[in-house]
Image (tube, rainbow, N blue to C red; front, side, top):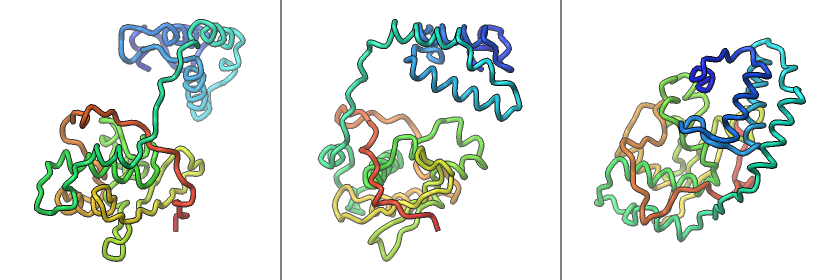
Length: 245
């Protein structure tokens, strides 16, 4: 939509001409952050999303089988597919310990609400083997509260059980949940500075919010602690998932 509005083009129904111009723009990249260069595989993924939109809108989809578009993507692959993906190592517990505030188990130590939310996000994501998109959200998403509360993590999705021995987290949407039934993640208390249950309990106590408020909220940008950069957590462990009741 941004590309079409910027170029004065009509987005729907999609045409070979418009899609071809978009493929060319995204293959080479533009000066705008909205039109940065992306890999051919990503272009194909985005085209599939556009195709799905046209299916839902009752529009024709023959355009997406165009040999012309396929040759453009193939050509982009020959030109730009040499870039090697940046290595992303999984976050180990010793890394998590460095990222989180160490006195998090001491009630007398005050953390800012920013730090409290930041710490809790890392502890919960690590313990639950969560993907980055499962516990983060964009600025625009909370502006649609009904959709947000049905697809993203909110305060109502957390339950602390048996006096803090464990907690459950209801993940309403995830990449692997194709039928959108939701899954429950079991978070066990560890009793140390990276304990997800203690982090959640402290967050709920010191930063109380309505049930449909985002579980994690960052009030202002944070500098990455110790020069680290948040990266996706390790692959999920299926044994930690329970079917949604």
